[in-house]
Image (cartoon, rainbow, N blue to C red):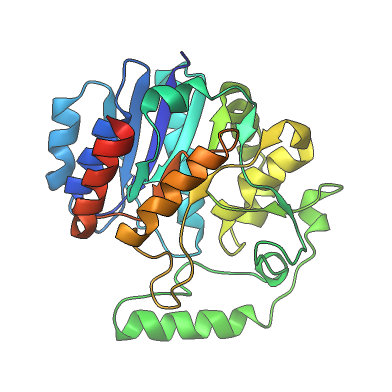
Length: 291
């Protein structure tokens, strides 16, 4: 059975995070968790205290929606896991996820180089407009708290519309790829990502891309080993225009289970999002799927 490092991005809800870790815990599992600022980290200390295979990242950052820190934290988690490895696979998930299969089934199914969604840019698929990559985007442009933060974000967005840059100047012959940020990497794929993350020119470009966590890994792997990448199966419901993605509710359970019964070759390993408000739904998954 492969050894798997779970890289988890969380910022709240230690109750659900504890249930997520418990569902994925095994002799082959290790957990590396970043709790984003300004969320207090004290409520999460018991997780590290109770499990020797769980590590809270000491260096914490504020994660801006669409900003550079998102990718920076993911790379910090990956580096921390590699330093404590070796591991056969590295799975990046959010703290509001939950598995839809037993941890043994998930680990036993890992055989490929990488599980990541690759969409060539530009493309109508995946809603990744070229403006994400040709304009300069600054952290703090979106979803700020307070009057000053909103004013700053407004002006950063206005300035961004006046900028333009040519991706070829930074990427050379490489083509841009994008997709969902959540993925699973083999040790070989992780080493390739870390190698290219040390390229200052490449990182200078992605530092000012909008949602760089949805394109950096994808661009690197899409230009180095695309034929060895399999799609990452993660259930999310984007039908609600207000809450995106929607909280998983009772109405989703039958759909989740039916899909995994019908298509055994491409099952959903995880779904999001969950929290303590839909803990009754998590209980159903614990009883039906996980146990």
